[in-house]
Image (cartoon, rainbow, N blue to C red; front, side):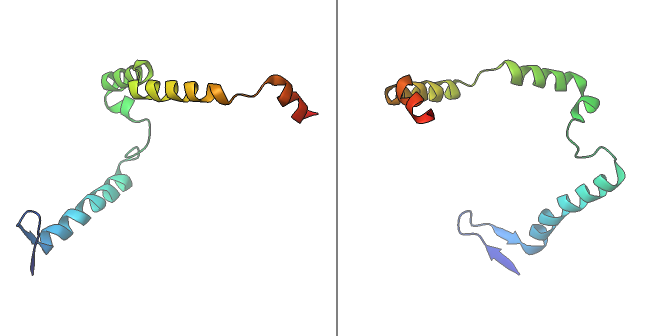
Length: 93
């Protein structure tokens, strides 16, 4: 039986849909059972050391400009709401 998708007006085969949903899962399960390091974190260095080192350096040295902007907004907004140190001492004692 075939369904017709409203967005693309394309026939979608149930058989192809099922195969697409299950094939990847089956292949991953087989690879996990056969290959000891498959899917484990940190094995990228063993597979491709050059790329792994490049990515490690890149992620540690690059700067996210959006985070800088958000942090600036937070620090400027929080400055007006700071309490004096004497009121903080009163709460401690």
